[in-house]
Amino acid sequence: MENTIDPAVLLLNGATREGGNTDSLLSYIETGAYKIGVPVEQIYLRDCSFGQCIGCYYCNDYGECSQNDDMTLIRFKIQKASVLVFAAPIYWSDLPGLMKTFIDRLYFYYHSPSSHLIANKKVVIIHVMAEKEDIAFETELVNKFYQRMCRSLRLDMVDTLIFDKLYSASDLRKRPDFIGQCYQYGQKLGELIEYEQVNRL
Ligand SMILES: Cc1cc2nc3c(=O)[nH]c(=O)nc-3n(C[C@H](O)[C@H](O)[C@H](O)COP(=O)(O)O)c2cc1C
Image (tube, rainbow, N blue to C red; front, top):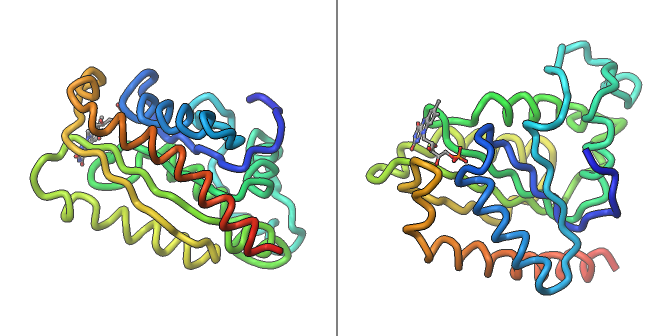
């Protein structure tokens, strides 16, 4: 993982398929954000090396994680960012295991002494899915999960974007509306950051 400048927006990509729909949608968001000069960085969780939370609660007592892996740098970037975008395909009406493993490691921020480090950051959720009919049913579980996560970590969930009817990676080519939406959303991220900065003053 690159150690670059501090991103204002961190795109946390939880897709396991390289070059799939999540990758493509996030690349359009990135392009839109770059266009207006928003510092954005994408982290491909599949390319990172981090272990599962082992439930040792070392973080509760010492404010450090007992595991020293790529999460150390990712946490640093999370703490610097203003907006966190959690993006993943829907697997079995839920998160893919990769994203869940990653979020388990954010337990680090659940208790003091570290809970203040990310409190009040803005969160955007992105679901990518094949379902074409009962979107509400397909996303009910995962939406509840993210609500719970944001409430527990004192994060401010501002948007949930859903991209449905995408099964194979080539399906996105048939959806110029999604591509345009992502590009525009990338630009909207600039407004979220400005809002955040004004409210910090
Ligand atoms: C293991 C697995 C489980 C899936 N479960 C669902 C599901 O419950 N609902 C749904 O709409 N799509 C489901 N899908 C389809 C993916 O969400 C869809 O293909 C998505 O576009 C994949 O995103 P990606 O191209 O970024 O990998 C599943 C796919 C896989 C491989």
